[in-house]
Length: 308
Image 1 (cartoon, rainbow, N blue to C red):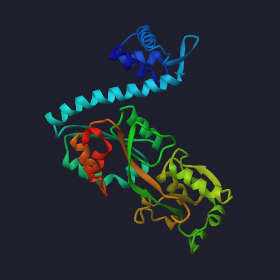
Image 2 (cartoon, helix red, strand yellow; image 1 turned 180 degrees about the horizontal axis):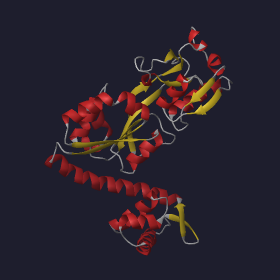
Image 3 (tube, rainbow, N blue to C red; image 1 turned 90 degrees about the vertical axis):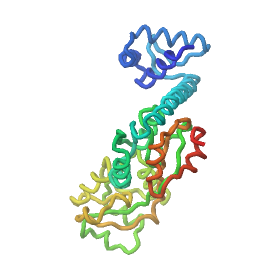
Image 4 (cartoon, rainbow, N blue to C red; image 1 turned 60 degrees about the horizontal axis):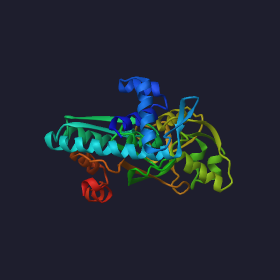
């Protein structure tokens, strides 16, 4: 068993089962990749990939287990390099945070500002995606942290620490009749066209679940990509929307008004996630402690064996 064989398997999986794309990324030949994967399968005595007419179409059931183990192997290898970097150049490096629009736009700016001033030599990158994609990026080693709400599927290889709750409010154009409602109900909301959120975000699931449990069918006009897009169309008077309360800025959003809807919809939880066996550099720990309320080092040590 060779390390390059493991790398080939992982890269084919990452490239959507395209051996040619993996070979190009790895700067080697397609036949070479295929041969090394077949040698590994022969040594293990299992098929890692499903094949149809010599074409890879997906992972076998044991193949999924193999890929998870390989991901952990490379996480450990990366941790060894990171330990060296942490002690040789503590103020330099890179930090990639995969996060959602709401977090990046409304919740993280003050943290980012403080971090950049404290660590000007660290290359900080934000990668915007939906929650499941954020965690997939961390699991694949393409991001160091994910800061997002609940995902559509579990990620057992990630540590997920709860951070802050995300409550919801209804927004409508200034002067809209629903704003005269004293205590908002689901029936009140269902009377008007709704600009919904991306279905891959927990806010959408929890909003729809609330209507379903009451046997109410909401009038979904269309789905917007993020909170800012939703507010744009609400301000045009096309409908109302239900957003994270944190995404509403009374000073900037002068054309809309908000009503508290936290009693109608279950709050989401923002989770901070990282690879279970990752070595977290000191500036990453400092970033986590800049979050308010902070994720303390004691909490992180309790969650990961490489920082105890």
